[in-house]
Length: 115
Length: 111
Image (cartoon, rainbow over all chains, first blue to last red; front, side, top):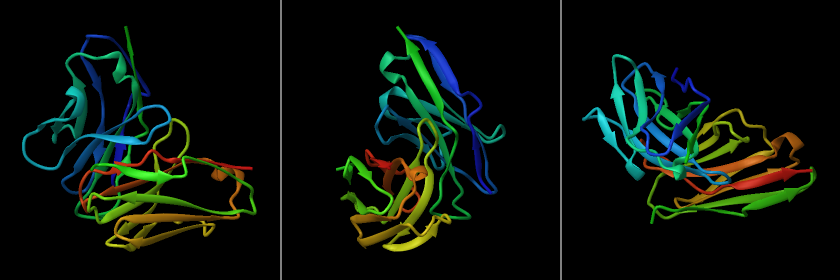
């Protein structure tokens, strides 16, 4: 079985400060990992993914994430937060060795960036 | 074109009505998905189509009936829904193992 945990319901940061949104996962094989963002009254928007290769993945809008196999983590980071980054963030995992069609999403973390 | 479109944007229906949600993508993706999402919760997978065949049904009640007429279109037929079915319904598409691209959703209210 595959699972994802986002341990923080809410993250608050000041504009210009670095931000981190945490994600840990559990899969039986090698994971495919994804981050999505959802703005109010919108669908989810793909930010970045880790499939294989370099552990540091860069994505849209200046976001990046680091895959850490030993800690089974895939934390989302940004060096300097913007007020417009305020949104709901979901981490997702897919185990390619099992059910190819199904991603499991974390419960989400609400990021609030204050001016 | 990385857009997934969904119609209608909003839908209000009674418990005896029949309606359909529509989804379209032109990215050449061969996997398409229906999700149900309640406010501030993660999306819940309902159905997955792979190469136009239903590959996953997450034990969804029969009042929801999916259809994939071709590789670009996905429908969700609704009949005799319950008030607890009110939610945001999201369509997504992906390459078979890639990231999913989501539409804006249909906000459904069942009275």
